[in-house]
Image 1 (tube, rainbow, N blue to C red):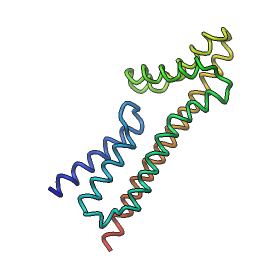
Image 2 (image 1 turned 180 degrees about the horizontal axis):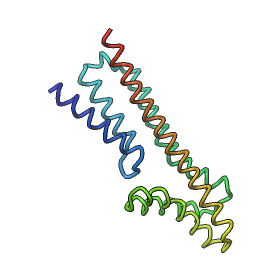
Image 3 (image 1 turned 45 degrees about the vertical axis):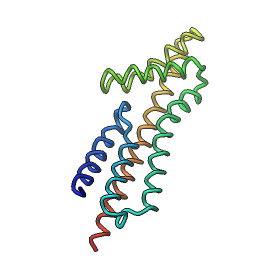
Image 4 (image 1 turned 90 degrees about the vertical axis):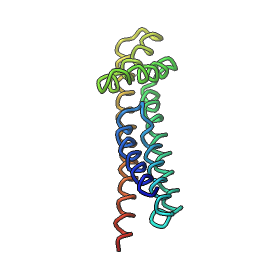
Length: 162
């Protein structure tokens, strides 16, 4: 049973790492679930409650930053509500078109939303670019939190050997 829990935990961690880049997969949530399975497999001796709380905080903060950063990028440029909705819809639709769709979906959606309201191509381009930069910063924050989870688990595993 312990072996299955460890394998399940490692699979969750690997799929979660993939999910930090691909938004259709709840990456940090899966990584926390994998961490919890690893902790449970070791009877919370190696990975304790305090560590799990820290990992949960990493997962929540990273997930929140992923969503908030794109909106802050749009708001920073003075985007309208329609541009923010366009970025959200563009991100969802873009998820079905692999990496280019993931990168360009929010940018195009925000630009279309802003153009729809103001009919100003320069302003729409500025809003789209700001949304894109916010999206990239959100992904960087999410990847940073994912690496913090992996490094915490690695350190806990190495320390337990001594």
